[in-house]
Length: 331
Image 1 (cartoon, rainbow, N blue to C red):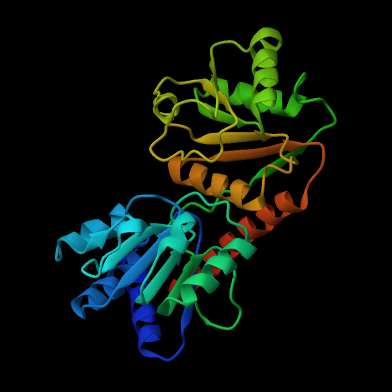
Image 2 (image 1 turned 180 degrees about the vertical axis):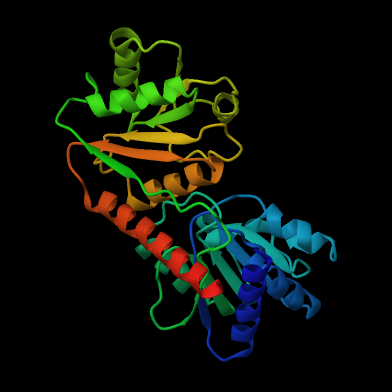
């Protein structure tokens, strides 16, 4: 890991010294952001300003812990109150229009937390920050800007492959029935005392599936818990953190982070729903792989295979291909 981080940091520093305005760093969902530590610290030393745009309202603690070891009182996490003395500013991408002033460097991070931004929205955000920053780094899973410097940072140091979803195609009504192959999977999860999340597109599906699984399917030796997106986030987190084994959580809340949860496998019912974009499905695979280091499973269950589902399969295979090639280069 240290070698790959060191290589990425070196490449970022080399790019910064050149005339190219934009650098794209390609990687997998939820990869580390420590690759930006050196360039941020260097610009802070030079009394220059950095804006870090991402999908959370707070600061990126992985980075700020490193920054605060050397510098205090220079970090701002509220775009509406940015002042000149704050050199490092963390901003949610929804607050981009509230940013004023000019920056030496803007980092657009679409990797380190759950993202549902499509390519057009990321490109729109990039164009906006290009007008307020002299240099821009895009941290993404795919190409957004064609004509720019690029670094491939699919991590070879992670032993397990990126989770590739399995498809189960069925003609049964998933609100009232279950395909036999999925039933076998659930029995295997129960036998091995696994905790699994079953995702559905909306609250109606959640109620239907929960009723079927508890009143008709009658699975034994397992807890089945409904978890609604509308519920308080503290309730959601408490449920996700429960340690009991052999548990099925049925939820319509894919956007809620699974960070620090005990869930290591996922089934997406009605995966062909238009509510499931390829980014949502891809980041789910990334979350499950990060939580479960031993044989994680993500199943997409649907009548049809959508373009978004196919895209997830293609992207995850490409991640693993690039990772394998990078490992060979290191031998």
